[in-house]
Length: 539
Ligand code: HEM
Image 1: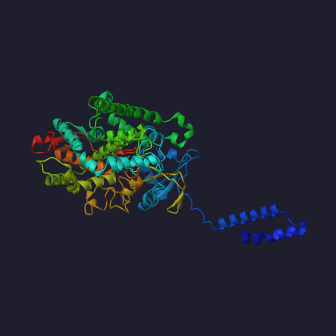
Image 2: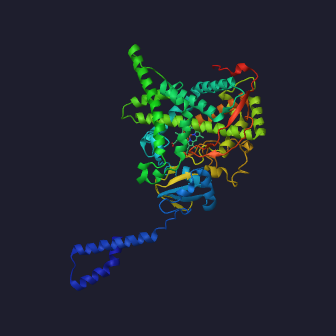
Image 3: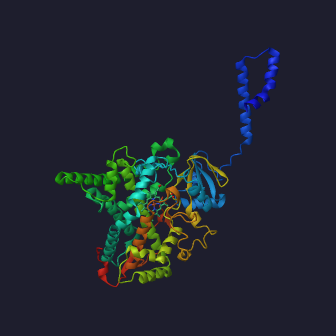
């Protein structure tokens, strides 16, 4: 190459040397280097393919971009409408932040399968950083941080392993049966279905975390407004925050989102501190009395043991990381389950003929002289189809958890620059008439014939209620088990009716988890043949 360059520019060197005598060696060398550089740049430019353009998208206003046109309600619906105009991949400028929205299964596959690593980054909004003790949890920590891999393994592989979940069945059963017993005591009165499911799921998760109900004064105080805290948290997490888009004005916290989150975090922090302190004190006390430390086998003890490991150990955890993981368990495991229970119950109330089929199946498989056990669940194929159909029409996280692109990539013929925020609009795919027959109809039968086809594992990119790829929900098995168990128990144990004079409505309220706008209130009547079955029975 050097030779070619020299011969290309030799005329210049030759001419110069003829006129003025021999050139100094350093000057000739400089000319040669310059020549080579010009030639290289020219060759590279000629051979480089033009960069694909950025995806299309609506124009916004100067500085704020498209932000004022998004509204703050039901972002997934606004995104779906825009997909109609701009196609399955489009861009939005939110301030100076480039946001890419994707709404086709083939592009979703490129993100979560073909370029999974590049798209596994997160860019946690301020609200998420605050509530997760500085992104010390799993959902909002960076994929490239070694602590994310450690925490994810601890939760998904160790704490939520199938063996552990089976071992904790008694705790889930106890909480579900206690709920059924409490409802039975108040039959004829209206119940808030979301709240009922929330308290059941929360107590089951808390049982797994530290083996009991919330303890201490802080525990008792927080239990009363735990659901409100959690709902508020989800709304704040889902709200576009001006401070995220314009970091220079973040300190003013114009929408009060940071302040709201700090308040919620304080309540959780006090609770976690009190439970951890109780545990550490109990262990020390026991050690003093009989020379042995307390051997609990719940999640909290497992995490505290990792905290006590040497800092050099790859699996050691800081206290904030423990709180982050507890937060993911509390938040990830409760609101998703209760919201999904409420949507299924609302759809069943809307479709009495489907409700009858569910009840018949429960009668056939379980019998009215029996209570539900988890081993019944795989045999309830119609109820499972109802749950799948409800996930399609009401995915709890219709935009999954937004990802961030860790390196520049080409997607669907467009460039996605590094640092872009990426939303996968699963709601729009779930409502696509090219994929689903009459998509707005609630028709569980569409999932009946081939039950393996649309499972929750994230391999079919038309249907991802638990996400897919490296960021897929690590609580899938627990979430799916709790949801089916709670629902089957509610439906098997009671007949439900709307309070007189109320009307059913199915509108939604956006947050990172999309809920029913107005809580579903229903009146239960006993359904089982023997009232003894409503008492809590140990296994
Ligand atoms: C019905 C129940 C549930 C549903 C529908 C659900 C759904 C989801 C979805 C859609 C995601 C985002 C996945 C992605 O971006 O690809 C997710 C992430 C997550 N979920 Fe769940 N989830 C449920 C239950 C649970 C439970 C029980 C836990 C904890 C015990 C949990 C913990 C998490 C965590 C920690 C993440 C973040 C994972 C990461 O970023 O690496 N979820 N979930």
